[in-house]
Amino acid sequence: MYGDRYAWPPDADAVQPLQYLGSDGLHDYWGATLPAPRRRVRYLFYLEGADGSRIWLTERGPCPRRPRLGHFQYPYIHRADTFRQPEWIRGAVFYEIFPDRFDNGDPGNDPPGCLPWGAPPTREGMAGGDLAGIRRRLDYLRDLGVTCLYLTPIFKAPSNHKYDTADYYHVDPAFGTEAELRELVAAAHRRGIRVILDGVFNHAGAQWPPFRDVVAKGPDSPYVGWFYQIHSFPVDPAKVNYETWGPDVATLPKVDTSHPEVAAYFLAVAEHWIREAGIDGWRLDVANEVNHGFWRRLRERVKALRPDAFLLGEIWHDASDWLQGDQFDSVMNYPWREAVVAFLTGELDPVEFDRHLTRLRFQYPGEVLKGLVNLLGSHDTPRIRTVLGSREGAALAAVLLFTAEGVPMVYYGDEIGLEGGEDPDCRRCYPWDDPAGQDRGLLSLYRRLGAIRRRFPWLNDGAWETFVADPVRGVLGFCRRPTPLVSPEPAAGEEGLYVVVNRSAAPVEVTLPTGSDLVDLLAGEMLCGRLEGRTLALPAYGAAVVAPRSLLSPRPGG
Image 1 (cartoon, rainbow, N blue to C red):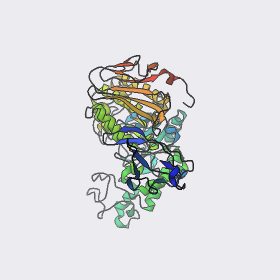
Image 2 (image 1 turned 90 degrees about the horizontal axis):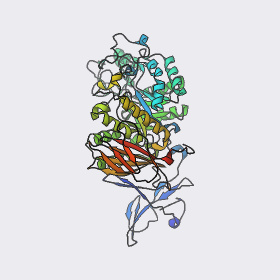
Image 3 (image 1 turned 60 degrees about the horizontal axis):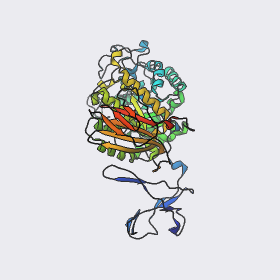
């Protein structure tokens, strides 16, 4: 029951039935969409028994009689307080690149002692990948369906990973030049691909000039307050007598972003690369260990400069505190990855997996959910092909990645089945010149899934309806509809995509809940099934994405 919060008495409030949206096994989720033409609303809930009796729920708790006070309130819905994802996120496909291992486009900038391309990765060794290599593979990435590149750090640093930044204003010479970065971004933009860089603002490198000054001058350094906590002087990297990232990593001293000069420095860095290189946003490293005030200021500054810039935080847990509209647009959705891995390795059965997804779905508001960046792996995790132990498992994971709510992100090489264990093994070189190291069937599947994502951009936020979750046969089937998740009821006659995944080693048959003329969009790809009418036959570890033919017709507005 709801109404204008200034209407009195509230007897004329309207009634809106709640619709069931799903269950995670512990909680049932219900929802409704309320109009608020005057940008303010009050509301309360009531449960009605079969005998007509009611229990009312207000912000003060349950009540046996209809209350006159205690309503839940939206006092006023200000435009400045509403959260909106950048429009280009709709239908986006991200691709993470670890530059040193993606492609060596300019051997002339290789540092001394480079490892041979494809040699087993080490923590210290460089392989020679660079910005020129990324640029010459842009057509490959476009054909894969990629619309945004995320590059791990590219600024001057002694390591191969560059998270130990020595100079935030210059591209590392092993990767190229500032001019090459501008050329890469411009070339990507011409292909409809955006570029975001990695912002390492939680810590710097031991060769960063302010830290070197503190090491040299001790408490007399003007930068001594720039670092989070120095335990004693002289500062000695051998003793690690200062706060660092992680467990006493001497090369990564932690900075104090609450210090006005530190905040001003990094805010200027964030603005600089948007102005100078035209980048489209930032992925923010160790985002949960930086103070909230700094992130709020960064958002204000970046969005003032480029309103459609994308701010992506690295947070591995519930990120609600960072996704209130005043800090990040999104986070890397590692909890989603954990659920997918648990399902495909048999730790979760289809019912349990579906419940996990439901919990994640209602953890955040719908506008946040549609921008969450889902991933199967990154430079910080073992490769999905290695984790699941088979190309079939990797293929099923890809189907789930591209048909889920949110935004899919591919870690370079996953599309060809590149393997790798824990860091640094997960950072192997892309085997461009080794056909035997490329799973062409998996690559074809990724390209098909990228095309599906492009054709149906509403997969970001369309409704999800599970129609089969069979723990005995290991089958999960769900329908994705264009209607946003915030709308509990699909429009009358609305069609959707039907996705079925068979996790088991036995073939299965599934009856789809529609009688429309159907097309399997994965027909001809690895692990595809056989569709006859409404009956879908899947092989062991098979999958299908089925669409009514009417959904494939051109539609106004895409």
